[in-house]
Length: 258
View 1: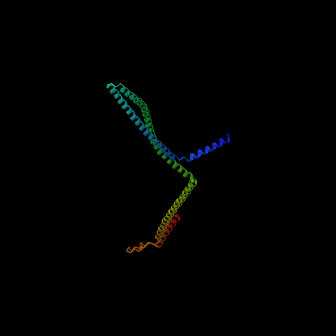
View 2 (view 1 turned 135 degrees about the vertical axis):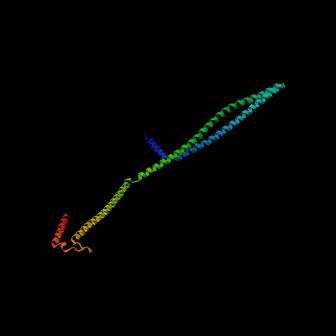
View 3 (view 1 turned 90 degrees about the horizontal axis):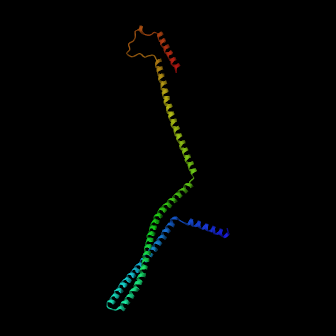
C-alpha cells in the first residue's frame, strides 16, 4: 500500500468519525423532514404546471375539433351551392386542423399519463412525510429515553457505592450499639427495682419475726377487768421457770432453723 493511499484512508476515517460525532439524530430527522417538505413543494408546483399544460392542450384540441367541424360544414355548404373549388379549399383547411388535432391528441394523452404519475408521486410523498413525522416523534421519544438512561447510568457509575455502603454499615452498627445500651440500661433498672423489693420483703420478714419474738418474751399483761385468781390457783415460781425454759428452747430451735 502506497503512502498516499494510507494518508487518504486515514483522512477519510477521521472525516467519517467527525461526521458521525457531529450527527445529532434529532436534528438530522428535522432536516430530513424539511428536505422532504421542500421536495413536496416542488412536486406540487410541477403537478400544477403539468395540469395547466394539460388544460391548455385540451383547449387547443377542442378548438381544433371545432374548426374541423366548421370547415366540414363549410365544404358541405359550398357543394350545395355548386362551388366545388370553394368546397375543396374548405376540405384543405379541415385537413390542416385534423392534422393539428391528431398531434394535440397525442400530446394530450401523454400529458394525461404524466399528470396521473405526478399525482401518484405527490400522494406517496405526502404519505411518506406523514409517516416520517410520526417516526420522528417516536425516535425523538426513544432518543430522549436513551439520553436519560445514559445520564442515569453515568450518575450511577460516578457514585462511590463502596463508601456509601460502608457509611450505611457504620450507621447500622451505631444504631445496634445504641439499642444494646438502651436494653442494658432497662435490664439494670429492672434488676435494681427487683433487688429493692426483695430487700423490702426480706426486711419485713425479719421485722415480723422480731416482733413475734418480742411478744413471746414479754410476760402477758393482765386484763383490766380480769378477776384475780384465788391464791391457790396462782402459778408458783417453779411453774414460771418451766414456762421460760420452754420458750427459750423454742427460741433456740427457731434460731437453728434460720
